[in-house]
Image 1 (tube, rainbow, N blue to C red):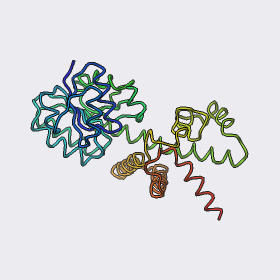
Image 2: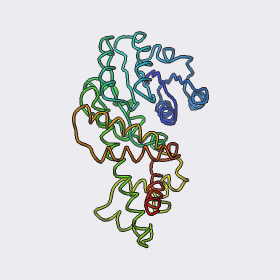
Image 3: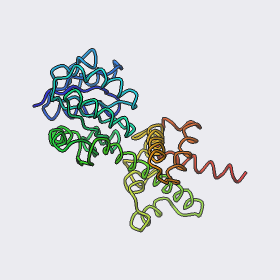
Image 4: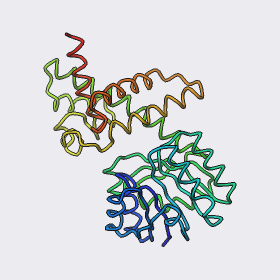
Length: 298
């Protein structure tokens, strides 16, 4: 049993904290939202009034925050209060430079830090079946592995500080691109008179098969668990996909990598978000792509 401070209890952080409670850990939680905090308490976490209070006496501290700026603010307040040797785990998706700067700051305070962003969305967070991509020193990774395993099905060491974030933004850039391609294929199939289920049955067993089709199909019917069957209520909101595509574009610019499809995917998701899609699941971009085609036709 480990005493864990957990800061950030939104759609992802809340279920993750609950998974740690179910695994037998003592979780002391904090969030700026009273509703989020109340749900964590209902799940068995103890309430804290501030982030430093949540971290007091903790052997490990976990954050799940919306941005690099939020991470800098929260960890900047936490580092001076933590006992040397405390394990710091940030599960947010942020830019690589900030992740590496936080690791350096943690080390200066005698602390170990892991950047451990996740893949899998809200359903996987609730089911404790997330995938963690982890950057940090090997010793810190081994200390953090059991805690992350309580929240996920796969915990993979990606290398040094910041490499977890690098893996996450590369993965999600690929996901954004593949979802657009999958949506375009379904739009084209329908316009050519091909039934969506028939096309799914073929493509899911042919060379066009990909996760965006077989696990997260953007049309209702073929994959019952996909958001398309819940009016595109988000498992992973368009706004979050757009955030990750912007991070990928920023990282690509910084290291002079050519990512033309990643850039185009970002542009399409920006347009979709600006046209009312920000809070829908990212797979709902199929409607924007279909509507854009109609508009181009006049």
